[in-house]
Length: 429
Picture: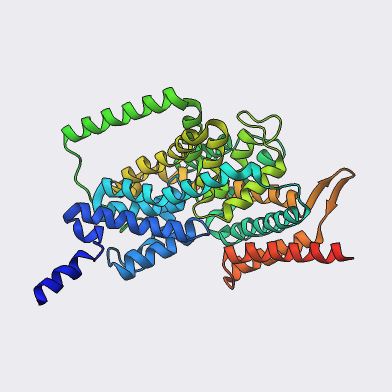
């Protein structure tokens, strides 16, 4: 009787897919599900995802040392790619090698792709001309201005050092904001300048990375050949389908140092305004899009890539753009993590990273100028108008970020609510 009851109870239990798997497949499945959950429920970008992942994989699962991801944040910032994606690649490689890195990167990008694809599909149905909605977007844009400005302030000492740092920062801001130089050219010039200074004996201390490497055996020749064939076939296929879109976002992926905000000027070059090469989005629509990217899970750059890809080539275009954005970080970081010992003696790599850091700060300053012109100083039919409310909301958001008294998402929603409340008070009178 007891045996029959146990059998009956067993039949009604829902099996756990992780327990059903064994060995390496079980580890890969657990890795995928954990990163998928993190990316699905954590809103606030790569830094928020990194903090939660450090807790899950360090404290809870004991797959890493507690605080290991936070210790290696400088490495993630120095390799092109999104912080959330680089963080996933590192954990995946530590746990399950190169396959684990691919699985973790897919898991951290998939929720963002799905959710923002739905947002992009329904974007045209939003009543953007509504005064209440416009007020909410003003609050969102003002908050983003404060968030980006606060990020620049918090990372200032790390990115801008010495005479070269300030010169590169000023030159980058003037080149992008005044002369509208392409951001890729700014980063390239900064990298060359850093390498030149390094070879002239003006560089600083070499990059230290004693514990960040992942010791993996080289792939067997047979596996290398098979992998190369698969990569070439995949690149040929995507180039035939949407080559221009894919390689454009590959370029964006190579430009992305230290987070998604640095790509905002590059996105504006290609997609915003009447002179843009790929799309001609109005500036206001682009600012609304940037606000929406902060209200949905996932990194800003992935959300934006999904939106632009969908606008250009539908669902397939969204997938192609997202894949192009993430591909460089996978290949570069997996290569770097298996050979980090060489970094300490490579003058080229040291000079490149030293040169790019202040240029990255320049990109973020330029992005803050863009959002400031959309919120604090706005274009009107009569010229420019100063918005005290926009300035106050930006200051509130920057204070929340720097003091850590309020999460980024909470400050964004709070600014939107304050803007709506102010509009309601004005409407009543």
